[in-house]
Image (cartoon, rainbow, N blue to C red):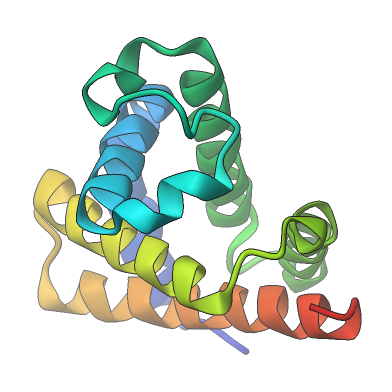
Length: 151
């Protein structure tokens, strides 16, 4: 899937806001996610930590940093190296398929990503559309690879 120069610019410019502090930005997204969709907390190694204490939990902070680095790496190569984006998301599928996380959970995470990013970066309609396109693209890669791996 190709991205126009404007779509790439929209994503990269808006990514500067969460990129300034990947861990805190990721924490905001994941706290939103498990608050809005609490059943998803069971998929994480910190599932026994109360939501109000997540930000202080090392495992939580480490995990959100890893999540945000996946996005950071994807944004960095967006528009330049499609094979690298495919590899990033196929690798994520390989590392997550054994956890048997349903697609619904990933889609709920997507909702939290878009909600928090929209608020934090004050996304324009064009930027929102670009992010929707990017998430559609990377999730298609993720879901296809997970399906190939038997998820």
